[in-house]
Image 1 (cartoon, rainbow over the protein chains, first blue to last red):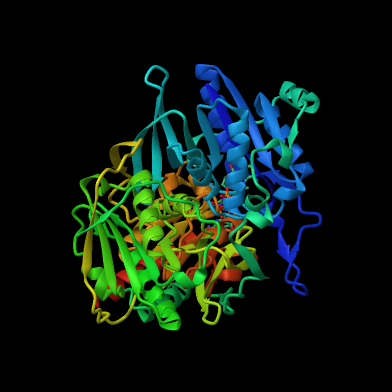
Image 2 (cartoon, chains in turn brown, green):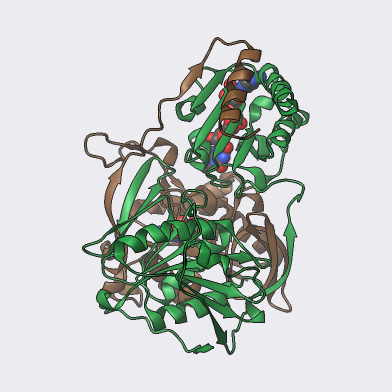
Length: 264
Length: 346
Ligand SMILES: Cc1cc2nc3c(=O)[nH]c(=O)nc-3n(C[C@H](O)[C@H](O)[C@H](O)COP(=O)(O)OP(=O)(O)OC[C@H]3O[C@@H](n4cnc5c(N)ncnc54)[C@H](O)[C@@H]3O)c2cc1C
Ligand SMILES: Nc1ncnc2c1ncn2[C@@H]1O[C@H](COP(=O)(O)O)[C@@H](O)[C@H]1O
């Protein structure tokens, strides 16, 4: 089985703030991490590889420092990693990102299952996974919370794709793409040996000339969407804080509000 | 009946925005029931359509959908109903293909869908097929009437910033919209249009749908709920979740949970609110024993009204709460339950 996992390096969103003067993101000093959702994708690929054999390749599109993120997943057990990096790819939206990643996966060649996180913690779009599946014209299952069975003979995978009120049980032929949610597994921590391997690993960098893509379809130029304004979220209306009220009084305050809202 | 051709869609790179007119709303149905998020979208679409002076079209796929006419009274000028047994249950491949074909044929300038599990997966594939921009999980929509651009506003970076996004050179302009943020029309819309059934010939689907498993049906689904009572680690013990359940029962509300509560195994993941769980925007959110870590806040801070009970006066949840009660939940909540019972009786 050949697994390809797409991982993204993102700023730790808990630390991101907006500069009130310029309304731009303050990125300085914000640590970069592997998108937390992608770790479930990595873990699932490793679990399946351990059971059925094969190879796990991680790819990431991003600036040169995204290499760190790839080393991190190598330390978890990923076999090889490729960094997709080029100034032409900068500023890509989800259309251009999925286009470029799909081209990279085509270049990798044979694959059976592609895994992505459900969404990236910076953009939160959940669009790149399905976008890659569409470009590669393969079936997809999104928000996968459980893999029930990988049937090596039939070359199918049965899994649970999450909805608001439950989950669909689906059977997909390989090759296919799945996007992963937290419920799927518990990502492992890097092992000591993994860390050593990661330190020494060669991570090839594929640029614009290495992929079969056109300039007008990658990076900013290939992105249909444009961000025109960034601003801090509007502050919520000043709330009222009741610090010194008896429990019975507090209960009355809440109940009055619920009555006022017609909830009783 | 119109027949829809199922050839491959061409990816146009050069488009003339002037040829594209009208606002489309993807009408999401599950088990034949049109989802409330669709009516919210139609409410929002009417406002945009008024500014652009164009009709609103609802795109419905399915086989035995109940009351498709409700789409007209909820704001649609017409309904395109692609009817086929193969479309009864959602399948991303046949759905995306049928809708992409309709888009290429009829050229709407805006296509909206709800940012549900279905909507997000579906519109993402359609956007690639028709080579359109797609903005995810919008919480605000407006139009620049002069340039006929959809102004799409959404939170990013875990809700730390808001961004307004446009799509000037591609059509349609596509967006998914966060459920519960837009409001359905108050009064029925006096639609002059009708339901046009469209037949399709072959709709291939490589994904085999086996069955649907519903999570604990006794409980109300947090994504749909108008009121959510959420418990956090402050509850200390799984059995204490009973007081959250009791409060929720009295209010007819859903039960939410922080990640800490879910990770401790007190309640299952489908109740988790926040970055790794669900994003919710109910009319009322009551947080009990929840600290309000940023990852939790991003999932609930667009709620209309927030009440928080926490014994720590510095808990970040109070920054977003309309009413904050500093106190011990084991004292406050039982009193509240008492009070609510008393009021219900009288
Ligand atoms: C990548 C990532 C993703 C995450 N995603 C999510 C997510 O989706 N959703 C989420 O919720 N979290 C998420 N988290 C975790 C988040 O950072 C917090 O750890 C979590 O929200 C804390 O849950 P809590 O508020 O229940 O617990 P705590 O932070 O432990 O807070 C418990 C609160 O209860 C109060 N309390 C205790 N006893 C009482 C009492 N008797 N009466 C009244 N108040 C009391 C305490 O003062 C405290 O404020 C994520 C974290 C990471 C790193
Ligand atoms: N630049 C990137 N490089 C590699 N994978 C990515 C990149 N952007 C997004 N992905 C993958 O696509 C998923 C969804 O991202 P998004 O659609 O941006 O929310 C992520 O969890 C990653 O698995």
